[in-house]
Amino acid sequence: MGATGGRRRPGQLEAQVVTVLSASPEPLTPGEVRDRLDPAGALSYSTVVTTLTRLYENGALQRHRDGRAFRYSAVSNAAGLVADRMSRLLAGEPDRTSVLRRFVSTLDSGDEQILRDLLRDHPDQKMPE
Picture 1 (tube, rainbow, N blue to C red):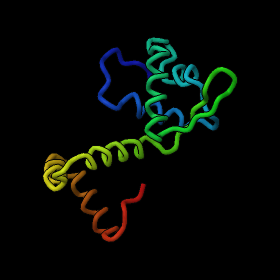
Picture 2: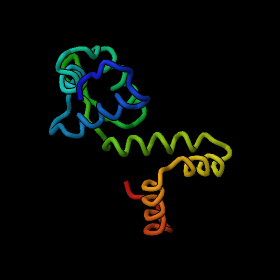
Picture 3: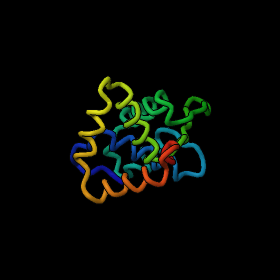
Picture 4: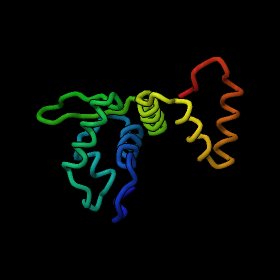
């Protein structure tokens, strides 16, 4: 999961951070998160702290003080993080029908079938996390 040398996709670092925290049996400090993400040290500590803070403020992480540092743990997994981001984006749109129509039109046939199956299997309830 180390640095690839290229620019990350939007949300990629956040998903990687949540994945690292989800896999850890105990909460981690920013330095521990950075070391697990990028043992070579190319990822800056301040970038990790900024990402952890943003995820905490968005409700994706829990944190508690441990001496002078904070320790972080994941509230949900990376899939939950992406789903929450999608829900927040959709909630801010006045024409949700158009947004959903365009989203569905961009799905490849495999993802479209997964969505159809999920909607068929859960017609009257929220999608499982």
